[in-house]
Image (tube, rainbow, N blue to C red; front, top):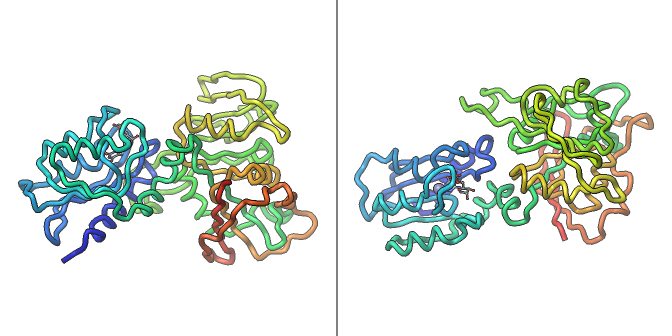
Length: 364
Ligand code: AOF
Ligand code: ZN
């Protein structure tokens, strides 16, 4: 007999299929089983479209009986948002047993979904594979609970800790650069400093094809964000400002909406190290519903972020090259990093001749 964990793990696999498209909504998977068999399965694809549970019920082509179980990775919603409440659909379907991996922190749901199901005589089990389900939606949880996005910072760095080279535009290998595209695609926004825009003129798009994603689904392009304190960037000059996607320019001077280019200029306070980064994170979460923020910082911005303890994960792509004096140095000022910052190595991976190191940084 297949265990309950088996079905929840399948629901988690399904939820993962939504990670490039569901934001600002969480990614949710659902399975309906009877005995050893999966009768229906689904995942949430996009904000505004049916939730996972509703799709699984619509796809089920057998009459519901008391031996059937529903497995869902997030507590079913019980409110009217862009779609109707899943609890209503579940109750009306007649399903009697439901396994929920983790409660929805959304204040409109937050345990109310479970109470409603139980008040209609449904057996509810909570907590199966909880940490896996939390992990898929760590950005959504961060935005709702901490009111700031989950922050990943990445840097490509040489053996001698240089982030630029006089010989090449790139520090890291082609495979490492491809890997970065998946992080970009999973993020709701990508943030850089104006210095990066001036020196590299990046497009900051997620360059992935349908083949790369093994899917026909069009991914969401992340919002592009730049820190440009004194409004030094001319919008007609850089790729960053091209196209109709939303762009945000945080600055210390003005609030303004540039309609033709879809650019929000947002004024924030400054502190000793420049624009107030904590305030920027709060605005990105509250006004723009950014769950996952990907930062591609230079040396200075990374130092500031680390010294203010604003990074959840640091990803370094380390090449074995020795660049020497002419390259720009990263990690200039380690003594600014708070002494009680806890850093763990989460994973190591070889990509061509580079090593990708993911550090988990625990905030105080
Ligand atoms: C579920 N199943 O598959 C998802 C849920 O605007 P709406 O109607 O799409 O509602 C969005 C909220 O619903 C979202 O903030 C989160 O609390 C919950 N997401 N719930 O039962 C799902 N994606
Ligand atoms: Zn729902």
